[in-house]
View 1: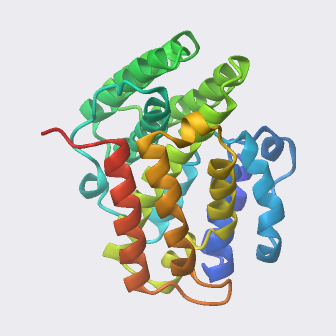
View 2: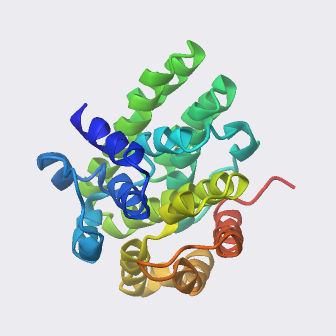
Length: 285
């Protein structure tokens, strides 16, 4: 696939900080119909990332399987250490359900990388339950069943493809229901869990280049804007309000484009996103 080839090529050619920053943006754009329609860029001008980030409007959960392949190239992470043991039940409120749906799909990619068939099957069932609560069960039932089937067979490439497909199906179904704001919360929940997993991996084998993946100011600005313009009903939700309050704390930790992100900053980013992920997906008592 040309997209994957160009992405991995950018990673392996020196793994420069600029390339690492670009990879995370490519990660976010991977599910955008606009991004699919264009030819993949061999080189990305990091100075223009805020303009490119406008394409995120069409992203549901920015954790496609490519990012895990990239991280594997950085040192073969132990994904079992990153994988969560429990999945929370379906929340009562729709905003929290949307955030958790993104979180759980992101967790699915981690489980696939860990090659844990039982956890992937649990995630497939959870995706179905959460989608039903959001009113889009019909759109994802085939994908959910396929995720379970291929995980049971330990067919990891096809399991990844079904997870990728589930994201697009959720997006289309929520668009048809005119639930754009809730779709943004799905995206945000996936980004937070993906970022938490990334900080865990980076911190265990810290290098300045791998930490550069966390330099994503355009995304932070984008989510901040989306939260600021959400309806008062959504912003009054306790979890959404907490995310809106804490998300700006990450901005100074990622530094400027030409500065390195220290291991201490990675720790602080991890603490913030972990706190927010716990709010979205509280552990079982």
